[in-house]
Length: 354
Image (cartoon, rainbow, N blue to C red; front, side, top):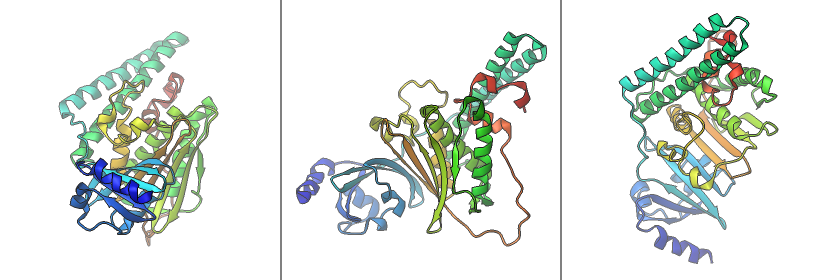
């Protein structure tokens, strides 16, 4: 039965331009011509980890997607598991990303600034007028929403062109996670929501651009908050294994439809209207940040069963000489920007204007 199934794969994928590999028991049992063009000939019976990183094969679900580096290029790997056979598809080319001119980005930032200026002027005249205060909060919220969209457009374009600013240095990933989750929970407290943080008690050192890692994590938290009900659970967990730091974001939300899972790392996946500005670009940016750090991302989800995201980042030795660590909680501006899809208008009051 297994042999018949594997023989049938040749008819299905023999002419595909995408590389397709079948794996059973950690050995390659099928490879189409496109896979041999990508990885070389004689792939049959080779260990699957000779072709792709170990973490590509770790998820136990029957459908997931990975963002990895292959031969110095970012590639997406889609995985489907049926009757013990793991079928991996690697597109021949990465889907094109947006390419937004500096002039357009400048116009968007100017518009965002004008929204903020208007909200400040209204707040200055609000006094005891509750309606004016409400309008100012609405404008302030929209300022941060537009700023988030503009930043995502700029970063997506920079990632596609290999020009995203990146300034890594040795840092404590566990400490960053603790501080970030604590700050996010402060903004979520009025809604009666919180994110759990596990495994972050001891330092975990990696070479990281702190700003970019915060951006990546806030994107994952925002996605979970968007699609998880208030009585659901969201957990950020950090663990280490084999010189890798594993960041896990698990939620009990609505999950991702099978039809969309394969396109999560692609800008072109946004073919359906979205109620949330910038929806979809955040994951493209997040996986680009993971790749810049020499890492990878895996997303596993099923409709109605929640979503599991894993970010793998290489660890490093702690610096020989370092000052006593001081908390570096992110400023309110970053949080108000990245959390704008999930925060109510009331969160955008005068005390948080930076």
